[in-house]
Length: 311
Image (cartoon, rainbow, N blue to C red):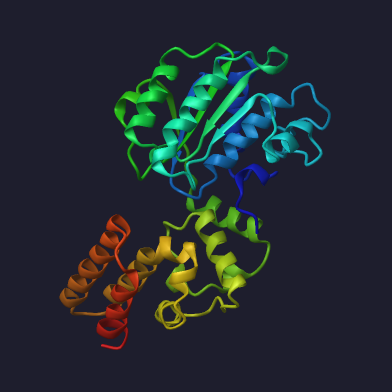
C-alpha cells in the first residue's frame, strides 16, 4: 500500500470539507496562506495535493473529479508534480532534510516566488511537516509570508501534536482536519482492501490509530512476514531478538509507541499498577533521551528485555 501523498489519487473522508475549500477557490475567497493541521496520518498532505490538482487541472484534459475526489492518473499536472517537474509548484517536504539545509531550501523558495509564474497562473508552495522547520527557516519564511505575491498560494501542513510559533500561525488561516472513529475504520478498510485490520491483534488497536499508522504497520508486517495476530509482547521480543530496530527506520521512529502499547496492556490487566507505572516512565524517558541525544538504543532495549519481558 502506497503512503506517498502525491501519488494518492483517491481522497477519503473529506468530501464535505473539500467542497467548502473548492467553493472558496471558485469564488476567489480562498486565503493565500493556509495551514492544514491535524494528527499524523489522517490525510492532510493528501488533501493538499488534491486541492493543488483541482487548481492546476482546471483547463487540462482529465481534470480533477471533484464529485468523487479523484485525481486522474493521466492528468498532465498530476504527472508533472509526481515527477517533480511542475513549473508552478514548489515543495519543501522536511522529511529527510537536515536542519542546516532547511534555510537554503527556504531561500531557494523565496527566489522562486519572486520570479514570474508559468503562463501567469498560480504558483503553489507546499511546505509539509512545517513543525520540523528550525527557527532560522521559520524567520526567513515569515518575511515572504507577510507580503506574498498575489499569484502565490502557500499551503502549510502541520502535525497538530507539535507546536509551531505563534507568529507564523497568526499570519495564516488555519484549518483543523480530523476524522471520527467510524470514518477512520472505513478509510482503513478502503486503503488496505484486505482483512489485515480485521485480523490485527487488539493489542495494536486503539482510538488514536490514524489510517496512516495502520497502513505503515501493515506494510511493515507484510515486508517482514509477520502475522497480524501476533501479540505486542511477542512483537517487541521479535524486534529485539532479530535486531530489527537497527535496520528499519519505521521501528526506530516508533519503538516508544510500541512500548507504550505494551505498558498500556499491562496497566489495564493488572490490579497492582504502581510498578508498571514506574517501568513505563523509566523506559519511555530512556527511549526519548536516545532520540534526543542520539544515544545507544540497543542497550535500552536489552535492558527492557531483561527487566520486563523476561523479568
